[in-house]
Image (cartoon, rainbow, N blue to C red; front, side, top):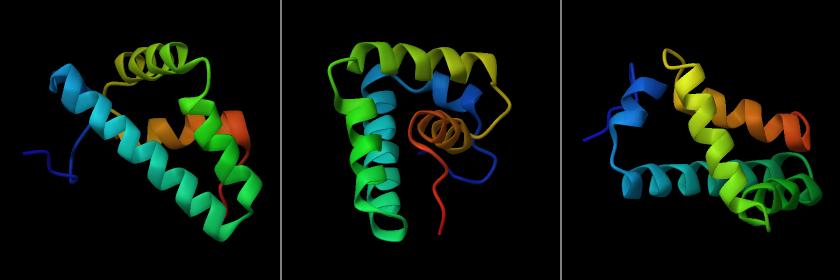
Length: 92
């Protein structure tokens, strides 16, 4: 079981590939939903396209490489940084 408190990218990388994919997709879906509901619909679409678009394999590679580079950082912070770099700051 994955616990949020103290969960780092190093912990994320210990998950099997199927669980990593499930976690990433859940994070992307939630960021897209939050962005669409608090900012604007276009930013939500951008986040969804950023991950689920034609370059999905490249995005997965970028996410995993970032997790390896920043092992002591919570994976949700890494995901947020990557999505915001692509689509702008998510404001509430």
